[in-house]
Length: 316
Ligand code: XMP
Image (cartoon, rainbow, N blue to C red; front, side, top):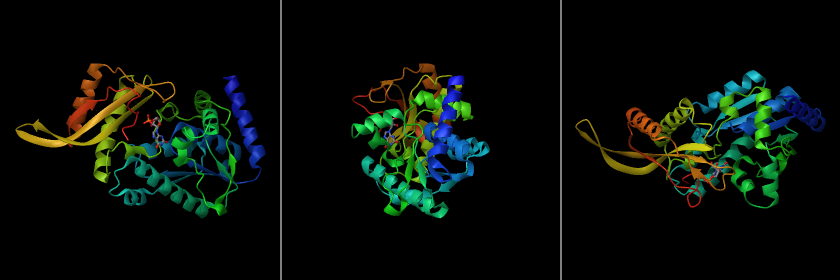
């Protein structure tokens, strides 16, 4: 509508005024905020934007391709970096959730720093900081902490940039409206949040390529199913978890001893508290059948019926 167009014009003018002839670096996570920011900056400064998307190997099925397909045709100068080998090596044998987060954060900064030097020099670093982030970081911990891995505060002295944060006064729904106007496809625009550490914190315990591959296929069946049955937008977040539990099952005449996958879907306003989503039994039955039929490494599927608190949304 007119109001959104007006906001976009103002943001574009604001960025141009701040950046001048400078060059801007942006980390793309694949989420709505950084993707929208990429589109906005491309409109404002064109080729003087370099957007870096680090594929840490912990993304969902087809995610990297979706992000590339959404941003490149709209003029975003996007560099995709396949860093999965480094991340996997650093995470080898690590089972503690906080340790995983720390390692992923550290590796992310290392990879991002390398790209900044390769493609630089840059004058500005753009961040998709929203108004609620501004409020919460003023209060201390909270979202600032949760977002720490995309919050590139840990860069060395010779890589200190001025910050460009055009969304500092905006709420999420306003960013979504802007995204629509800028042409971001709906599957990214209306996407559930996805944590920076990605599938690493949904693959419980020590991760491996094999386990990530199993989880990726389970997650894809569940998320595609939610979309197919028109249930996706009614959930605030939905996810699949690969547990380390192996249990006995039966397949034909054979006994199996395979993994248990868990499905979780929640509704929430602020992600601080959440209710488990009352998904229809028939839908859950369909998901369970599809998963055990298509993912042979899984012989049992459970649905998480715990609220937050006491459970968190993620399992790690
Ligand atoms: P929990 O599991 O704490 O999650 O109920 C609340 C929201 O935060 C997301 N989350 C993260 N996001 N890095 C992120 O960028 C993280 O380490 C992280 N841990 C949790 C989670 O997906 C949910 O939306």
